[in-house]
Length: 148
Length: 293
Image (cartoon, rainbow over all chains, first blue to last red; front, top):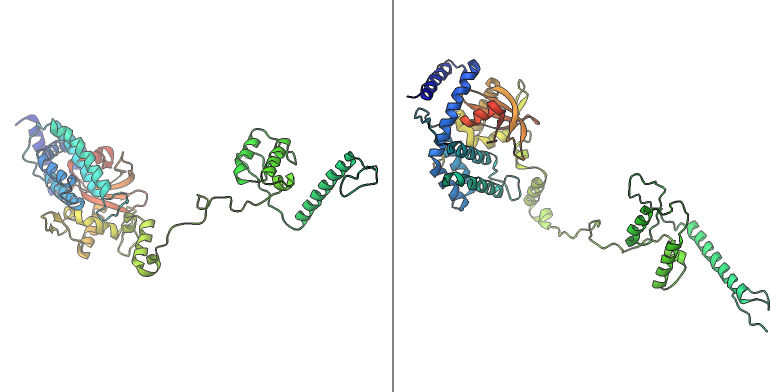
């Protein structure tokens, strides 16, 4: 177990102790909380990156008009939530450097899903056309990392 | 015997061609003058139009428009330094009026050139200034399908987001934090984010976890957001910073559950709420923003 892993488990344990007491670790010790947060971000990025094939498949189906915009939004959010809540005990502190960039693009897609108006009509601000164009742009960007 | 010349005045046999010419000029002048006075007294007056192409142009710059198409050339002549004080037409204007008079078949240069005349029908119909419209009225909007008309009107006036945020008796006002949870917006957001607040949710027919929009789930969602607002840390920041639609926002973040609620700073209205990813938490605590990656 390397230094990072030891420290991560120690901070995680601290957070659990406070959580059981109903106290925010963030409010008690912000410095340690932010350090723990940095570890968590790295692990989370890795989760998204490991699941990249699934994301690519879901996005491709939407861009190829196999699934509707609303179905894509629902399926993506479901996938995104599962990766968000995935157990952090399976750690890998040698994450791929691309995972951070990939995770950032997944965050952009979430943001689009969040403001997309499924019931909008044509020429509404966040209609299906806007949604599709936005996802297409992000997907082009994503492919740079997938090709590497 | 010298042949009499001139009409209508002559003073005997010694009338010369020169005198006859003077008589004619005098007669024309009198007739024009008398006609002008009659026109004025009978009320055939044109309001004087003044054109001031620049705000600092003196208001005394009066241009009487003869032909609409000539407005620009007249304005240009003023801009070029034309004499704004003279009361009558200058030699160039007289020559131009005379030329027009010839084109239109003669007549007095005053009548043709400088008597105010309204140019009916000179403006092309249905140009931008026209009040007419060629839009065909869809009678269905008035008679047949009243729902269509109503729908169209609504679509033209407010967005879907604005419609969701119309006041409702079931809105939740949180006075302690000066924010409001609109019922319509909570109803809209409960589907995707209800499960983050432990609102009963179930997989839909395609297997994706969703929260049904029932009165119980919506009320439960509003209650959970209210609790989050009251226990969370208030962070005044932004939403979607760097995007064209970014706005100032108030976040309420609970570091124990990891949930965050977003309100518009301008209207204090609820926008959305969900359990943040670690990346979003980092963005919020570092940059006071969510939605920029």
